[in-house]
Image 1 (cartoon, helix red, strand yellow):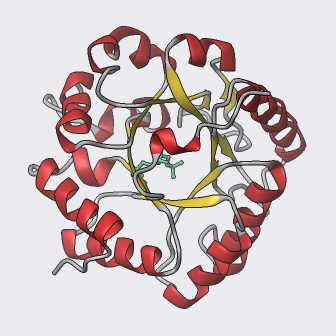
Image 2 (cartoon, helix red, strand yellow; image 1 turned 90 degrees about the vertical axis):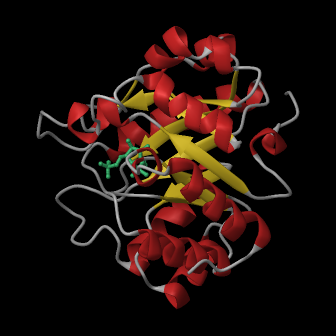
Length: 255
Ligand code: FBP
């Protein structure tokens, strides 16, 4: 088994990742005539010095060649579109082998905890986790409680359960939502144990709210964040990036 290369997407134990898989997950409605060009977002990742760029394989194949020297690539190996209202389940779309060929430094997989498809999701994740580790690649689990059995997907107890499941299933990182409960989030981070917690950005919010949220999750013990819309939907993505880095890597408070 190859040595796990976690540090490739970390700086001094912390991380700031940029995500652009929303074209699949949500469709073009998240984008404008400017941001729909993948190179616009990839340039932000490069200029902003992100610890990794999260892409589905299609965009990686067609656009990442010119960026691969500068930014670690994280391939999201499963995904789904949002048109069909079926059980939450994102099927595997890229093999670990193909992610390695594309130069990935890590892979990502969404687990919909509580979905009626959960047994299948767990099985699929477990196989991918073992394959990724054989190549020395860390795996990031998007831990999203969802489906008819989940009343409130950001309730502290359900987030804590999701974090623990990530640890139990062998995720190296869990990517999770924040719920504005700073005290409760310390418990969520504790439940993840040695699995590192990255907070997701979510829908566009005010800058003040974004900085407050990130500061709170870092205080609670998180490792960093994997963000998308709050950066590339902004008209000053690099300024926001600089501020996020101050909070994550320097422990500063902004605003
Ligand atoms: P954002 O920061 O834009 O929310 O991106 C994070 C992310 O996890 C993406 O990787 C993914 O496309 C999206 O959120 C999925 O969110 P949801 O399933 O809640 O619509």
